[in-house]
Length: 222
Ligand SMILES: Nc1ncnc2c1ncn2[C@@H]1O[C@H](COP(=O)(O)OP(=O)(O)OP(=O)(O)O)[C@@H](O)[C@H]1O
Ligand SMILES: [Mg+2]
Image 1 (cartoon, rainbow, N blue to C red):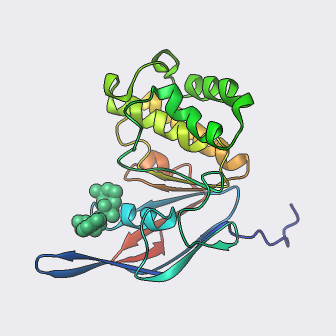
Image 2 (tube, helix red, strand yellow; image 1 turned 90 degrees about the vertical axis):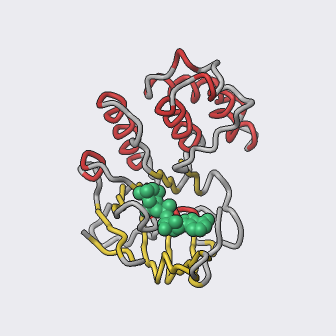
């Protein structure tokens, strides 16, 4: 790429605010968040527990609506949840369908977008890379939380989304599994996705092109 080429951000947040009602009054968790992520980069977001990382990710993927401000995904101002192929998410709470096997969960985005022909190849490849091949036919309730977490990451990546949001993707993993997840996040960016990761882990920050922190309701560079 020419050094003067301007790469357009595929994820843009402007002035996001979000308050939650509590018994002793509203708590303003996000107070004007601005951020941009361009294709090919991994950006990490740190911040103490309760600082609002997951609340921010819920706004970025359309699970929740801001009180003010806007989100643009792939040049479109978001009005509802964007297409999974444009913006896919690994939520902190995972959200796997309990009545489907891990392989069926991961295949779902491809089936829903009519790409049944590549289901077997993509699911097999991702399960091998994440070290969960032998668990493909088990249900979420029959595997550990860390194993479910890797399946939920595979489900987010399987359709090659243009924006990937991963909320604490290594929270429940051993050292070897962390390395596999980090390699996959890096490759997803190399393949052209914009990757935003919330994390408390230094080894995740170490693979980032840029580091951000959420503090006092705003995002700042680290
Ligand atoms: N739906 C909700 N209703 C009320 N309060 C909420 C809701 N969602 C989040 N909050 C509050 O917003 C704040 C930020 O929560 P959030 O889950 O975003 O933190 P976090 O930075 O992701 O923390 P962690 O690192 O523990 O995952 C917390 O004080 C939480 O209680
Ligand atoms: Mg969180």
